[in-house]
Image (spheres, rainbow, N blue to C red):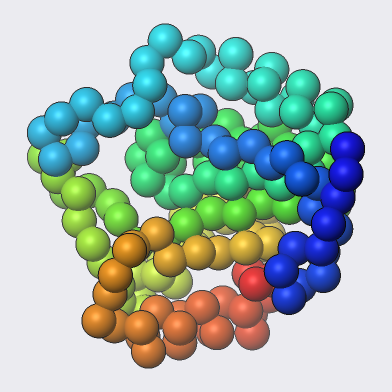
Length: 157
């Protein structure tokens, strides 16, 4: 599989990565079903394993995919390959008790959300941590949180 440098990081990333939204399963989002049904955890784990066998080395997930379930599957599946793969996750959306999407952009929330993602992914670092929001008026706070996480070694980029 061909690889190329990943943006300014220079990390070698294969041209095909695996997006892990479906691995989280279906959720209720703002009162409507969102995501896919019918994909079992066993199928998801086999998909991740097969992707690694085929040379995929970039896996993209988010804390809101299956409300964390995607990360719970991706982490253990990639644990034996952790130094050979790049894991990306996202932050910004979550949900309230009724399943309605919430946006949280506070530094404290982002720091706590990253810790929760690291626990679910069973790793000590994320290679790429991304803002999942399409807009925010609180960029300075978002960026401050990301800079703090980078200094702590919890995110690489």
